[in-house]
Amino acid sequence: MTDEHLMRQWADAHSEFTSDLDRGLLRLGQFFSARLHGGRPIGKAYAPAACVAAPSEPPMSATARGALAGLTACVATSALLLTVALLATADMHPAAAHPLMTHAIVA
Image (cartoon, rainbow, N blue to C red):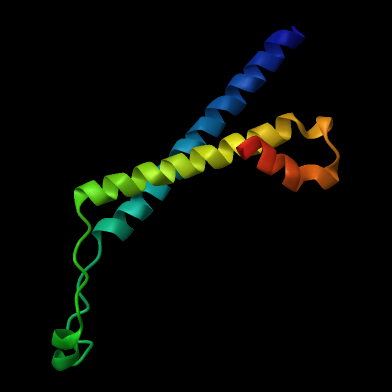
């Protein structure tokens, strides 16, 4: 009886949590979608001469954008691996040796 009660309580809490999570992710997606695609030009906020004289930056090519994304993924993965290695070996070395262990793990 207790098991059945716990399972029903867990199922109710799980469905409530997932619906809250879905709702939150949907709102977050709508916010970022509006921020990325909702940009509109300022219009006549600046003097025309200043707009013409300002140099425009060339758009980033798809190849450069892909390379930057790959580099970012490699750096994030390396940082995650280093963090997990330090946490997994935390009981094997004293707290004062963390900088030395970081260098040893990376090397």
